Image 1: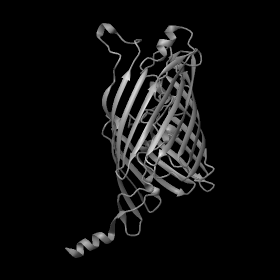
Image 2 (image 1 turned 180 degrees about the vertical axis):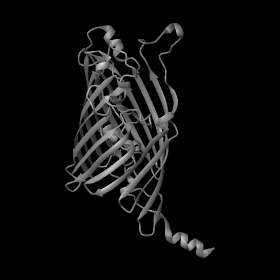
Image 3 (image 1 turned 90 degrees about the vertical axis):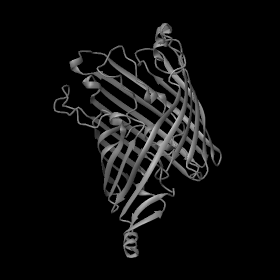
Image 4 (image 1 turned 180 degrees about the horizontal axis):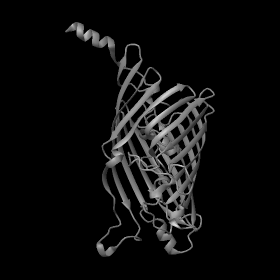
Length: 403
């Protein structure tokens, strides 16, 4: 029995070690964090399990417009307790050429239950190919590691549906794109001061894990898929996908990025959606600052027989500062032209919050308050319609555990 155990231990090492290459899972940062991993004696194979659990208490207060008092609809809705994410996954690498990642979000349903499933083949430092389900290369807010966001909620300008005076076969699109199925070429060049991603995806989002697309009727021969690209400059070397970590308070990083994509025959073949974005993020010692601006153009497909086109834009600026080694204060100003540039009026969503990193536990407590305001609308009806489905006052308190 002792010989058998010795053979097993010589083939596989259970180590407490820092993770580097296998840390890119988009959920929790494993770089520099001690934890459980399985590693071959030569280091040719590394297998690292991880988990992320988020529990939240939410309070949302809505204005009277859109509510039907005859049915006793209350101003306070969508409030109570929630589990945004309950993720169990594993990541690793083989022979320093192939890395892989798979995770399940037990808090989701349908196709979104499978949050990520991909493998990455590295030809060299400047060229790798990723295949499977993963984050599309668009916006700093979504590309940030899930467990290391500055505030517990992604900017509303990325997640809320836009408004247009036509009913689509599916829900109106959002400016943000998130997870999708596809293939992507990516790499780091110039001593990790420049990065790029170019990919083709289904364009159906995180909730669909099957092939459902066809050829475009408007552009003959072109598959009706989602085409995306992003380039970034990092003057001080590779910037971690974090918006604040108490283990990294003595560094200086910056990223400037441009991205663009087009979703051919999106929304049940109703529209062609084109997006573009600009990102800037800066981390120096205890300070984190980021700002983004993004744009979306929607044009209907020929079969819809609608000549209208719509342009939307939005953005945000946010900052965080560690006032103590475990305390980070945060603020964000988020804004959006939700009803398209053809109509006057904007919505703006300032927010404040804080993060408390509970030492030696991997627990993180986050809290935020957000107010939703409106300005510049021509009529009261336009003003009322622009915030439908959005809370005027929103409070979120979230406790997160990561391993």
